[in-house]
Length: 166
Image (cartoon, rainbow, N blue to C red):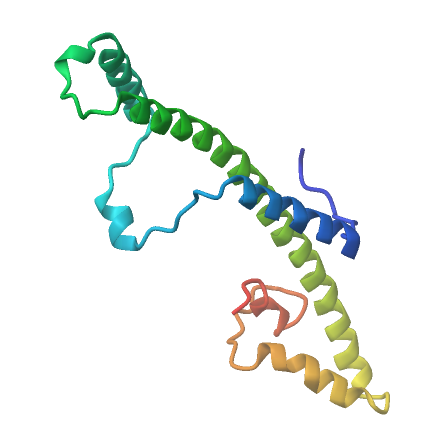
């Protein structure tokens, strides 16, 4: 679906229900951990090729238990493998959702900024002749304090630098 102007809202009730659903997801995954950067670096990573390797090694362990030391836990290998498969599937779904939320946030944020820049331009013009708007214009101008203009033909000199929020 191509991007269209977003005209939507998210009620407090809906947001609360979404947060409750996210809490439920976290509660269903009580074994989740947080790794330090060093731990992330030091651990083996299991990508597509490694998934096949682990699957094949599990099959080898299950069909040839006599070649393994007696303290090798084949059931734990199978549990780890199955959990890795399920978490991989879950991660893909969560990443897709996060990407949609991020894309929507970027788009709706852009819409809000574009409309706000229009308001700012009108406030600046009206402040020249309308009492009381000069302070509003100064307040809005704070957003652009310390930002250099690029002069790329934006709505205003200030607006041209608003494309990337600092």
